[in-house]
Length: 353
Image (tube, rainbow, N blue to C red; front, side, top):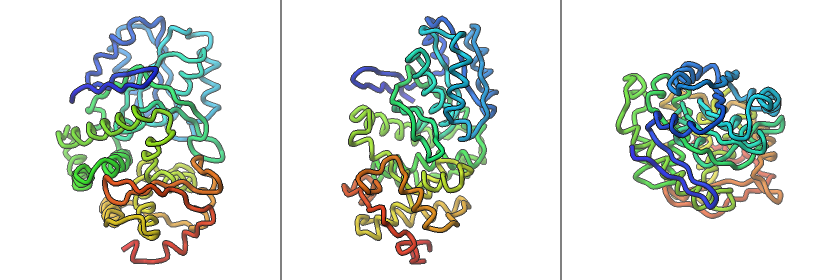
């Protein structure tokens, strides 16, 4: 895979599959802190040993519950006397470690350099690119954070072979989202990719690598044009309004990308009901969801509506959605009244058949 350079007005950073380059990036740092969780401890210790220098090592508990201000304060207090402004932080893990660790790095001494080593499919195709940092609040997911770009993203596809099946599906949800935004051809490639066949083979699939690369290029194009989500970048929220509501309803027991995958269907079906969608892609995504033997939402629609009403993207008594007219073609109408009645919309059983 060719290296990718992401350029914004005030910074630029490299995305590379040569993870050995990390050592040269951090060689000028006075001190290094590695942050991982217990799921990525093995990878983190391997990378730690390869760096050939003394590092601080912080292993956190996995899961969205860790992505909180309590954890941020714990890290700030612990490392305020161990690090300095010329230190560097290496974040080894998935979206949770990336979001949390990047926010910590942004706050420590008002900002120290950090480097991303994404170990999940989701973090490779999405969360490690674009500079979003966040923690969760009681009232919802990712409600507090800043924009701050990493100094480099270092990818090793071999990490994907260690993922549990549900985490693979989670990454696929974000991959399919990117494909749906990008083009009809990319969408069909991603939709038709046999995820289970690849997973059972435990190999490095060239087709999957190409899909990941295409998703990275889409994210690069979007965040270069709109770093702070003032316009175009909002398209990357496709499927996320529904998915964040579902995540919150289930108290984060379902991986983010699995909720995104179902959110792509629900928002597509909603768009179809409203006359915005002129394609069968919502049904195609539902078929894929069922093929992966995933459980559909089984709560009350009114409960989901309550979470939709506190989504951070809401504006002027309206819930913000992204609708695709068809794969690769954006529909520009995104606001839905907070008085939305999902039960009326989704009571039609044909939508779920």
